[in-house]
Length: 317
Ligand code: ADP
Ligand code: MN
Ligand code: MN
Ligand code: MN
Image 1 (cartoon, rainbow, N blue to C red):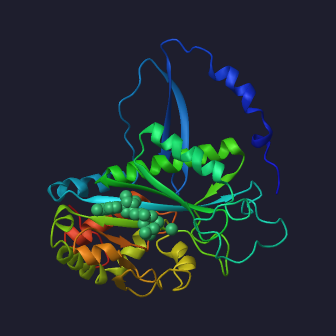
Image 2: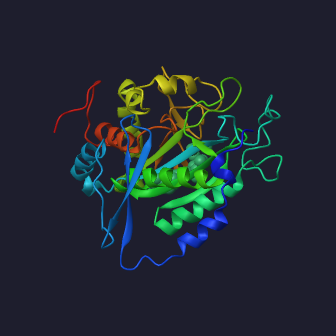
C-alpha cells in the first residue's frame, strides 16, 4: 500500500499546537456539500462566539419544506451508512497489494486481524460522533473486508440529513488523521464483492402504534407504483451509480424491479421480522446507495408515502 504523507506526519507534534490558548476566539469550520452532491468541503474562520446553527444549501431547503408539511405525523428515519476504507493509492485497506483477500464469509461482524481491517478508524469515528452530538446508534464490520457500516437514528424529519452529513464529514476527517480514505462508492470492487448501500429505515407515529403494519403496507404499495422516481433520487447520478450495485445479487434487489417482503434481504423494501410479528414499527428501503444524499432520500420517501405523490416528477409546493 502506498504511504500517505499525512500518515507519516507526527500527530504528537501537532498536539503542542492544539494546546495553545486561543483566548476568547473560536475557530468555526463551515462545512458544505459540494456541487457533485456527494463530496464535502470545509473552510475555517475566526469568530468571537460559538455559532448556534448553520444554513446549508443544496437539497436541504426542499427537504425541509416537505418535512414541515408532515410534522404532525412525526416521521422518523434511521440510515445505515456503509463505506469502504481505502489506502491513498485507492486500494482497499489491508488487502494484499497484488490480489485479493480470501472470499467473503468470515468478515461480516468479524473480529481478528485477519477479518476486521481498520477498526481503529471505526472506533475513533464512533467516539467523535458521540462527542459532536451526532445521533449515531451502532456500527458493524461488513461483508467485504475493509468495508464497515455505522447507523444513525432514529432521527426526526430534517435531522436525518443533518446528522448523516456531519457523520460523513467526521469520518473523512478521522480517516485523514489515519492517512487513509473513506469511500462511499456503491460498488468499489467489481465482481464477487458486496457493494455499499445506505439502507433507509422509515416510520411514522401511526406505523409505530398498535396495528401500524397496515400503514406500513399502504406506504409500500405507494412505493411500488413509483420505483423509477425513487431510483433517480437514490444516488447522485440518477441511478447510474446504483446500476453497478443493485444487481439482484449480494443481498440487493434488481434495479429494474420493485419488490417487498418480510425479512427479505433481496427485496427493495424489507419489513424486519420482528415488525411483521408485532404488526407495528418501521420498514427498510434497501435501495439508496452509499453515496446518496440523505436529504434527497428522505424527501422522496415523504413525498411518495405521506404526500401521496405519483409519477416521475416531484410536485411543486
Ligand atoms: P439491519 O438489520 O438492516 O442491519 P441496523 O440495525 O443496521 O439494521 O439499522 C437499523 C436502523 O433502523 C437504525 O439506523 C435505527 O436507528 C433505525 N430505526 C430503528 N427503529 C426505527 C423506527 N421506528 N423508525 C425509523 N428508523 C428506525
Ligand atoms: Mn445494518
Ligand atoms: Mn449493512
Ligand atoms: Mn439494513
